[in-house]
Image (cartoon, rainbow, N blue to C red; front, side, top):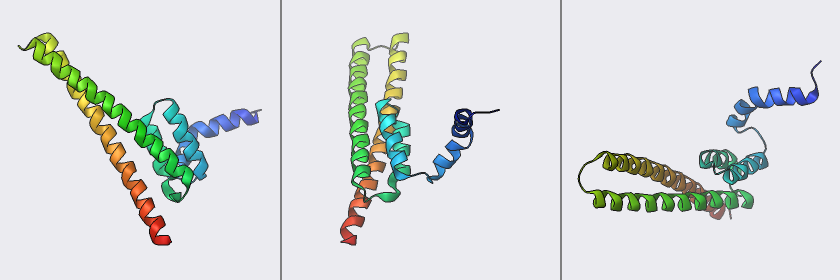
Length: 140
């Protein structure tokens, strides 16, 4: 006989993600998941959860969590930019094409890609914040 705990684990692993992706769960659930994702430095998941929780954009908690995710995106993007600058300096030092130079070029492309993804997340969430701000002003 299956226990209740086993059934709930089975539900969370099979049907749970599908229901979660539909946005049918309570607003607070998504905010809590976004904060958990931030704590684990999983920016992709945090952005996804904030976006799913965005159906109630007048909620101050949603705005706060959204701002926290935007801040984290900005911090990480600036770290990637610093890495890019460091790689450019290293490439200038080595000058001529070499195996090490090619490694720096690959790392530079990876850093640029990560920075661009973070900036797109930031822009997307910032637009959601502005839309919610505009909606709250027009509602008043």
